Length: 312
Image (cartoon, rainbow, N blue to C red; front, side, top):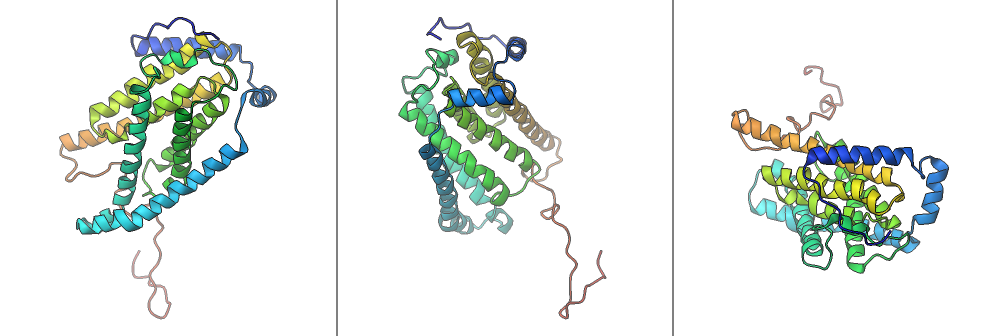
C-alpha cells in the first residue's frame, strides 16, 4: 500500500455508522483470516513480538504496581491524613491520586506525540496507514508509548481487582482494561497501521483528567468515533486492503465505544441527581450505597465463641 491521496473526512455520525457498516460487512464476506487455521497462519506471518519485549512488559507491570504501593504508603495516605479528610475517604484518595499522577504523565506524553512532533495522526488519521508493510519498524518514541500504556493496563487489570475500591462498574472496567491491552499488544505486534489506535487511545482514553461533562463527551464520544473508528474501520480498508485482523481490531474498538457510552450514562445520572436535588452531597454514583453491600454478613460471637442469634 502506497502513500495514496488523503481521504475525505467524515461529516457526522450517520455517515460514520453507514460507512463502517458497509466496510465491516464487506470485510466479513472477504475475510482472509477468519477461522482458527487462517488466524494462526496470519499470526505466524505478521506478528512480531520478541521474548525480550514480553519480559520488559511484565517487568513494567510489576514496576507500576510497586510504585503505586510505595507512593500510597509514603505519600498519598500521609497526605490524606494531613488534610484531615474523612477516614472513609482516606482509602479512596490513593487510588485517585495515583491515577492523577499517571494520567498527567501519559496524557502529556501522548499530547506531545500528537501535536508537537512530526506525526500527523490526529490531523490526518488515515496517514497512519500510508506505506504500511508487515514487520515494519516502530519508531522509538511510539514504542515507548506502547510500553507505557500496555504495561499500565496490565497493572490496571490486577489493581482493579485487588487494589481499587470495588464499584458497580468494576467488572466492566476489568473488561475494558483487557480489551485495551489486547488492542495495544496486537497493534504493536502486527505493526498493522494500528499505531493510530494506540496513540489516540492514549489521548482519548486518558481524558479521565477532564471530569467536566462536555469534555468527557467531546473526547470519548466525539473524537473517538470520528478519528479512531474512522481511520481504523474505514480508511484502513481503502489504504491497505486485506489488512490483517481487521475485524478483530474494529470489533474491540466498537466494544470500547459502547463502554464509553455506558460510563457517560453514569455522568448523566450524576448530573440529573444533582439538578433534581436527589443527591445531598457529591459522591460517585458508581459506588455502592452501603460500604459492605457486597460482603456477606457474618454472625457475631460472644467471648465464649457462641453464636449470637439476637440479630438478623
